[in-house]
Amino acid sequence: MSLELVEVNGLATIQDSGRKGWRRFGVPLSGPMDVFAFQAANLLAGNPSNSAAVEIGLGDMAFRATRDCLIAVAGAGFDLSVYIWDFPLWSSFFVRSGWIIRMNKTDNGMWAYLAIAGGVQTQPMLGSRSTYLRGALGGFEGRLLQAGDRLPSGTPSQPVNDLAARALPIEARPSYGGNPIVDVIMGPQENYFADESKSTFLSSEYSVSLTSDRMGYRLEGPALSHRDKAEMISEGMTPGAIEVPSNGQPIVMMADCPTTGGYPKIASIVSADLPVLAQCVPNKSKIRFQETTMAKAQKKYRVLMNGIENHIVKQSEW
Amino acid sequence: MTFKPKIVPLGDSSLLVQLGEEIDLAVNQRVHALADLVKISWLDGIIETVPAYSTLLVYYDPLILSFTQLKNDLHIRISQMENVGSNKPRQIEVPVLYGGEHGHDLEFVASHCNLRVDDVIRIHAERTYTVFMMGFTPGFPYMGKLDDAIVTPRMETPRTRVAAGTVAIAGSQTGIYPIDSPGGWRLIGRTSLRLFNPGSESPFLFSPGDQVRFIAEK
Image (cartoon, rainbow over all chains, first blue to last red):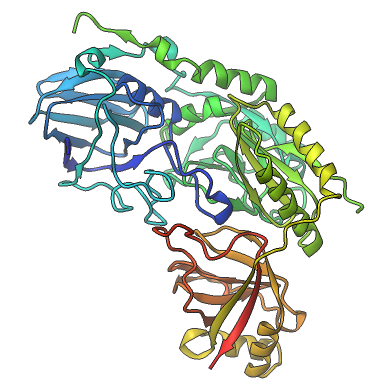
């Protein structure tokens, strides 16, 4: 044990890179809402990028170290303080036994990841430590973390003094915040929509509805009309896909999305921009979509994800 | 085969292989045959597949594999599919207690179809069904097709809770609820078999493509 939750006002779950290999049986991928921040937190903590970490959203949270340990926090929408000091996100720091790590919600993002050197070591279910709440699978007894929970962690990969006081500079991160323009690949069912609806989709502002969750972000904005029918034979689905049910309001599939669905998908958000969308604040961020090509999308993702660790810098002044 | 297979992107890290456009047993068998072919010779960068009625969704890692590489590879496999006999599907028997407290809607189904309750049971248990796909909740099998005589529409307002093990029908499909969950299908019986056992080495009773028969228990 190395971390205890002492205050939980939001939504905290354990997530690793997701539950792969079981989607054909109807088990969602799960994993982090913001893959980039999740991987960055792990790499700052000296972990493999897919190690289990704590995903924090919606409200204030506080942890107490129950032994000396090395922590890294990355993401958006939280202020961080450790013992008596304020710390920036996207950094790693050494924590003495008994110190409190406090994360206070702000209105400029949604999700942050707290990684501990050695990784959170709860019992994997179906090959993953990710929490799937609907199925009560994985994580900490398949549920949200509560005050009093103590998280087991593994052995750090290197001496923690070498890992402390490191940061990922803003240039190496996606452009979070503000009103993002998000790249999409159109289809597979763009022909279910009238031409006007396709241009409405690509030229209008959308915001995230308050009823959104880890399964999907409901978008509010101009309704899209189907040419003919709003339902089709069910087929496989993936995070980032944008479904449009009969009311015409798009829904972006997120980490816990069902594995199959029967509403037409007008487009999908590219992997490199999904972290930015995940951090959009309901009723605040204004989102626009722009069409891109497969080659550009895959290149953008490679540029973003390859070599995150090479951008990490040591903060000598701390 | 009039439908020409199509491979289209679903975003930049999965693609959809379309082998047909309807709920059809022959089309669905081709989907499972293709899923088997992908499994037999796993291409580095493929993560997993989700077979559905007439499509196979293939998830891949765009850091390892490009859309074009995977698409070309899958086109080759589709052309090989004609020559390869598909694996013999597994046969699974499911004991069911029909009606009463186990299947609250059995009498509704009977009256909707102008049949006696015993006839509904006999007709439901007569056919061998195929698991077309799985989804909704972990381990839920979408099976078909039902005999037209017992086709019944789903409920307009779903129940908030259907017990694990409940056997149900909706439209021309039949399924079994693996865990307690909301549900809008018509409940006709219950099995004592466990469909989802997350701690076990083989956590799911069914796999896509399985053949299933219901055995009426007294």
